[in-house]
Image (tube, rainbow, N blue to C red; front, top):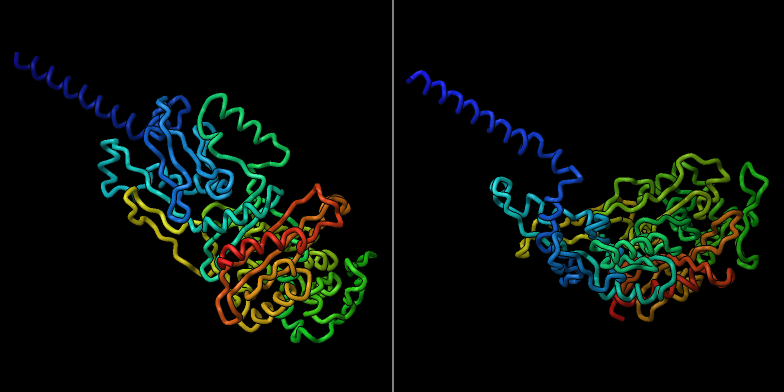
Length: 487
């Protein structure tokens, strides 16, 4: 009898071991495959079984969650959705996440290991972690001022604090309400289809994800390259710049918008104020491709690693060009492309005495109780130019506002520097140009700059002659700077 009992006990132990091995295989080895199986809704049910953490602007949430009582219980909601959509992105039960909702999803969904001091216990017990929150650098007054100033026109605004790199505003218009696509069912499906099919692309984040020819705003980069390289050592000395300027190796000549601008052999100061194409085209050729590229890249062009934490589109300055193409690129045409964020970085570097701070959109992440998980450190991105060159550039940009094409951005009692741009595009430049303006503002000459801003307006419905950076974009920049300075 005893041998049979021993055999039965051994068989039971063998079966128990097999069960344990199978449990390990299912719960550990095969877990990733089961988690990724489209038929497994457990993760979705868990994900939407509790409210999502909030995105905060000015210490107030611009997101929320509401219970539907459905299997996927909590649906994302948005306050002032169209105003903040370029910041938040969307969180949808059907279409996933985008922008900040995607970049900080672990914190907002409660899956970040940093949210629990007992991560191993939570993993074993399957206890859900309370989601954390994301506090942004956005200033609500500045964001709303920029949104109102755009007045529904197609375009974008990006504003930075030059001294810290904090992003104060990101506006893209026309916009959309992310709440309309947050859930499931016919309403969300219909809203998504309408948004995707819309001709004016309201879901496109033009401030971060759209690149444009920067036009004459890029002359700021060319002027820095000329000063840093020593091609120009006195901004009031005449340049050897014919009008028109024959593009090297080409039968085409580069001309200026106005024959009365006095661009022939114009000094850099005058050329910057009245925006002489001929002078800057020749300067780019004189500086040369390598130095022009190095200066553009110091400002952030050609950098695919830039993240704020959402990744913007890469702004491009070609690394291979002939001399004619380089001359055109030096006035912001040919294949040169930039996001509004990139051009705000150009203005910020000049305003901050040559130091470009790394732009960032997240101030900190916190747990559900508000205790910090991670605080974004302010750090320098590049030393683009020395202080002496930066001060010369500040003088040029102030002159462009006070005496040149940027008068519509001037503010009484404030030092404002800027540069307009009218960027040609389309086949043979037949399309209405984009209106650009970049600027910065400070309380006084010795004070630190409070804001750097870039504005682009795609005004395809306007008369071509009516489009200019000074006329269309500068007033928007002015509204942004007033909001920052409280004027």
